[in-house]
Image (tube, rainbow, N blue to C red; front, side):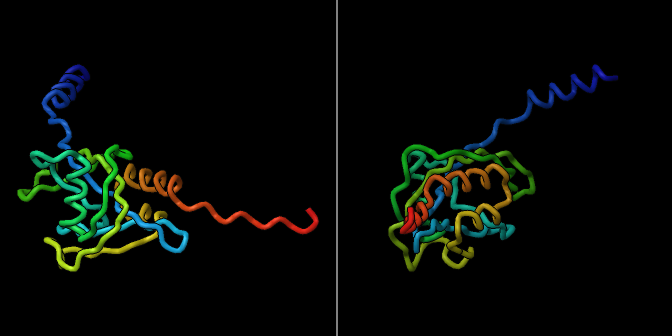
Amino acid sequence: MNFLNRLAADVHLMLRRPARMQYAALCYRVRKKSLEILLITSRDTGRWVIPKGWPMQGKRAHEVAEREAYEEAGVKGKAQKAAIGAYVYQKRMNHGLKISCKVQVHALEVDDFCKNFPEKGTRRLEWVDYKEAANRVDEPSLKSLILAFGERMAPAPASLPKSANG
């Protein structure tokens, strides 16, 4: 019976579809010497997420990330061409099926806010400290990615003044 269980598991692995690819923008700004991340809620479950979407014909990954940031959160800026990392999550499709998605993340420094954008009113948006952002998202690998980005990008604390004695 052990052999049959192993065989069934192997067949399941062979038939499993590879993760679908998506591209995301980790939108950030520096305010009052702290790094803030823009989080939005998903439309279906209300979980805290970052703007992301499917590949678009004729657009490179970082361009898709810029477009999704605008459509979902109403922010504009230049996304870095090189990804800062990736994470995997289970996306629930309209018919209830869950599919595995790999999300390539591009940092995007926000330099403009739009009053009107395609998904305005369908999501909540909130700027939070990068540690709070990592705390709010569900996906463990996205938490790690946000924390690593925050540690790399957070402004260094002002150096302490030297004492008169020393």
